Length: 95
Image 1 (cartoon, helix red, strand yellow):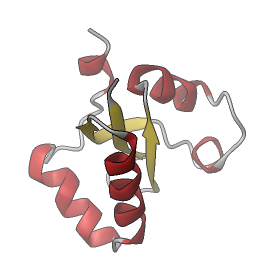
Image 2 (image 1 turned 135 degrees about the vertical axis):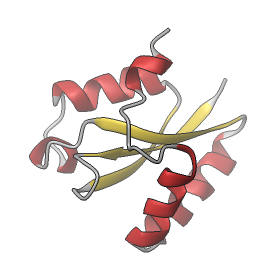
Image 3 (image 1 turned 60 degrees about the horizontal axis):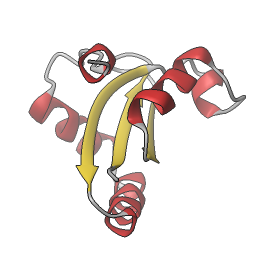
Image 4 (image 1 turned 90 degrees about the vertical axis):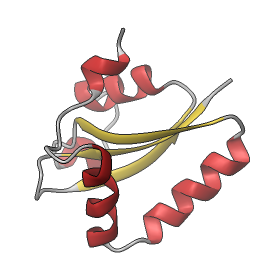
């Protein structure tokens, strides 16, 4: 089983959210549909802009905790290293 650490954004300079899941397609869909009243639904954070894949949950959880402590500028650099236009990656993972 794979585990994913991901970053969602409302827009380039908007709110961002760091999360973890074992089913990225399902979890991003839930965020998009606002299935749960949460930070992401309140601030319309629905665009998948970055993710990493891990083989074990311990590594994924450690990475998520690390990223949550990062400054916003560091997260921005991380996103822009692979997604400089802040494109929504959701369609690319739904294949």
